Image (cartoon, rainbow, N blue to C red):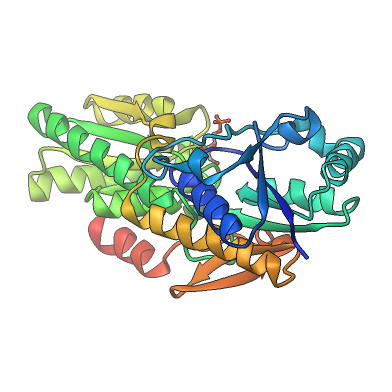
Amino acid sequence: MIKRVGVLTSGGDAPGMNAAIRAIVLTGAAYNIDIIGFRHGFNGLLDDDYQTLLPQHVQNIIQHGGTILKSARCKALHTPEGAKQAAEALQRLQLDALVVIGGDGSFRGALAIAEHYHGQIIGVPGTIDNDVDGTDYTIGFATAIDTALDAIDKIRDTADAFERIFLVELMGRHSGYITLSAGIAGGAEQIICPEFGTLQPDDLKTLIAPVQRAQLLRGKSSYIIVVAENSYPGGTTALAEALSSALGIECRACILGHIQRGGSPVGADRILATKLGAYAIEQLVLGANLMMAGEINQQAVLYPMAQTGAKKKQIDPYLVRWQQTIASD
Ligand code: F6P
């Protein structure tokens, strides 16, 4: 019988985490379950930093980015002592279960705690990177794309006016999901992401040839290359400088950075977060443990937490082929 459930948001915050917290609290209240919110991710377990969350605490938060519980990465959880201490906090507070909203790194932390904890643990995928297996989309991804797209559209205006080449760096840690999606939607001339292999200074000619063709044959006045972070040694600014000197044309780099993590969640993220937050509580009541609540083909599903980061989630191969063979030629 589930009576008390803890919840925390961990790792990089993502727009829609608040919507997930709200759904968890409202669903918990409907099942007469007390919901305890831990602040600053897993650190809240170690520091006894928590509060009871009632429906009145989650009013008017669905539209806000960030997370009312704050988020953090927790180094202490990487040690067996830290994981044990976190599990002891859950036992001491008589929590029957814990909901972890975060990415696969946060789920690894949850699994470490599970080795010492007698209650149930469930994950809700919240990260802009969409790099979690077992769900078509993670909470925050749709908003991050729209934020990146808004920036790319604006950069296009100035790139066009100045007839410049722009390199726009997007987030994604080691995944090209944001880059491919925002690049396609923004009509980027080229896309560079980890799935295409790490770009080395010697490979610059593969970037240069399509730029020259586009300028000569199509008379393009602006040219946007969307680049995933960690794609080039020295970073995207170094890549822009290398391109500038190779082409003899001014190339500018724009690093979008954490802007992609903020902002009001778009409708798709609010709906996904509400569905998965509610589903997580209902599945805990039915006995789910060490699973992640995901959505595949619009169906809420459970997926083993241990497998969420086991293999690299593939970006859309059709769009990759189209971008590389048709759009960038
Ligand atoms: O995982 C989300 C994310 O925003 C990644 O896209 C990015 O690589 C990383 O977090 C940045 O982390 P930090 O906020 O610690 O710089």
